[in-house]
Length: 427
Image (cartoon, rainbow, N blue to C red; front, side):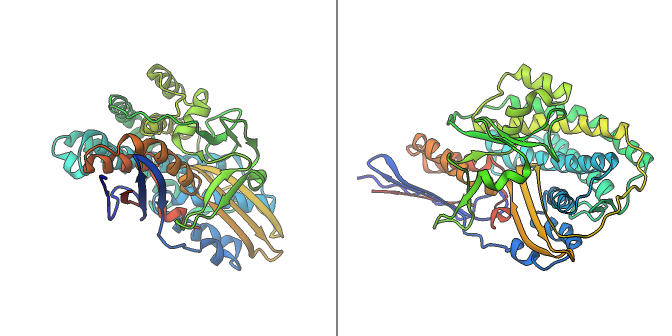
């Protein structure tokens, strides 16, 4: 009997901590557990009793990579509870802020988390020795995304200007035009990113996976729309809990999301491109169609989907800036009891917030489900399909392949707690 054990004490290039344990018996996987052992952070619990206007600042601390996504989603859920309808200018500025997070997050994942895997380097630092211009391009794109977040949100990390009813301050026309000029130059870098990612050799992983994303009749959905799927789901935000359920597994501190009556599902850039390809900006749509990959169920094309969305984000930001000349226009409102719901598309996928307020505006109940929490069960199912094909590879190569499956999702494990020590046991 041959025994084989793979163990990674700490997986690199993901946010958070966890482990993967695989047991093999007679050449077959008898047990596979994606064990997320990072402790719960209790955001839902300590929001209870807080004033509604404290919530956006608190929830931005859930994630340091996409704090604006949490802020926007929380604010929109609170506005839903309070019956507030904001101006078109506020909606445009929020979209600009959300896309700034897409630019910096997608750049970070493509160049610093995923690309070293595909090019055979242990890190982006090692990769820079042979691909310095590529890494410099990534740093410039990341800087641009950060600067756009700071311009609209008032700070690069944990923005301070988004508020219920609008913004506490808005950028000036000249400031927007100046960053618009930088965005126009950055289009060439986005196109080069697509060319680079499209040239990579991608492993095969085909599985019957339900893909879930927001969709709207007009634009590529980011801060609103209906939640749809490749298998017929089509619901508004307030019906989320009637269809999306969670279960606790003993081996994980992260709850596993599933669709009522069905199974796990995938959210994120791949799901968005698959479901909304025809709503991408013209250049992004044209390139995506020419590549000819989408729609696809292979999660290893997630990096390619991110590169398509990077170009889309830059073009969408340019269009928004062209039509903006911001002026203070916050909407007045009255604090009242109510319950509100919102779903947005964070860089990693579907983000859900819901709050119940009393008549003093204090939070009575909070419900937050992050993209990684939606994806955990799908990651595990991908590994069940993928792992048998790599178990006979050399130990180091098998470990890397399993890590790549996880990194397809760009998991934010800390956010998912409401990775990778890898062990294979053979019997």
